[in-house]
Image 1 (cartoon, helix red, strand yellow):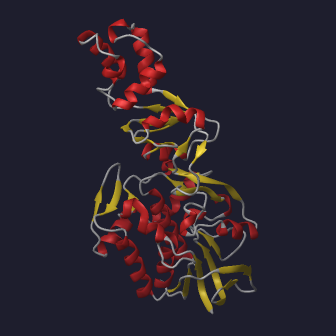
Image 2 (image 1 turned 90 degrees about the horizontal axis):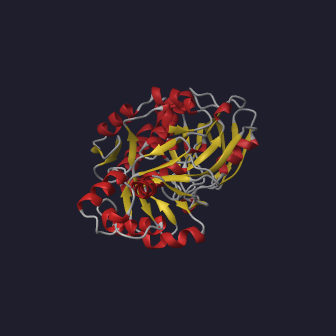
Image 3 (image 1 turned 90 degrees about the vertical axis):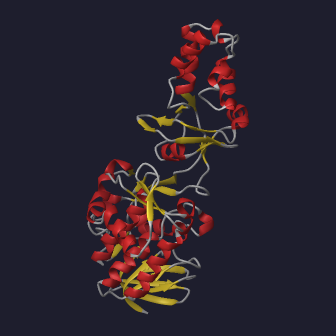
Length: 391
């Protein structure tokens, strides 16, 4: 089979690129190993797909060069994608922090893209394995389970390593290395943090407790909900900080971002000095968490027995509890893969490899990772669009 453009990976970026290229009159073949396209779209956002964010900016992407993404993001914006889904009759709403979700099912987004593929004339091959990719005299030779494909242009849109049960592999990185492109170290991103057994033991009674607070490492801080689990910490704030945390680093957890614990304890000491510390803390924290703070503070007696210095020390645990994760839940539950094909090797306008004409990398396989909240989908749409205009 001979085509103008072969795209490997029918996720968000791959499908979007295929539609854009086919609408420009290109003969496009989209190749996917799974039985259905857009599986990550389908399960995202609790089944409603957090498809973009109103607050797209360079500082909300993790990369060796965060500004690399701006060219594509500014040329195909969140407003462009919103117009696209409104044109398809898909209703949406803003949930929080600029995060946009479908009112209905994420399957609507997949159905829109599949319909666009059909309308544009692009060909989609599902359940198709790729055994080899080689550069040919004109373009690329791709050996698949359906036969050999000859393509003038090749777009790698096969994602990262996250959620391997859905078919995620390191194939895109292997192709990049095969053609001499550098790879920034890959690791799980937007993923729960785990603790060593000796540190986890006293935390086990807290499993299931959720608070609105913040988590910080270094100079980076996220103010959102966090959840204690049987293995460590999860929740939006923790998933966000996981993209910045590295092994060996501590994290600082604020368990009560809404209330000044020190001022509260002083006020309660004046009003009801005979109550226990945990009782006073339980007015601003879940009861199990209040007991935990009292225990680790190693403080005895009632509120009336405590000095200002002791109350400040207890408040310090509430607002700056230092914890030291030992790892993450890994790619099994990671929403994205950090790192990937180095942006130094790619043209920011077209996503083409600078040293391999006709070879493109888009979406998650590139060293561009967005925050939680629709940023990674917008990068998929924007990078897919950019390559789709160039192939």
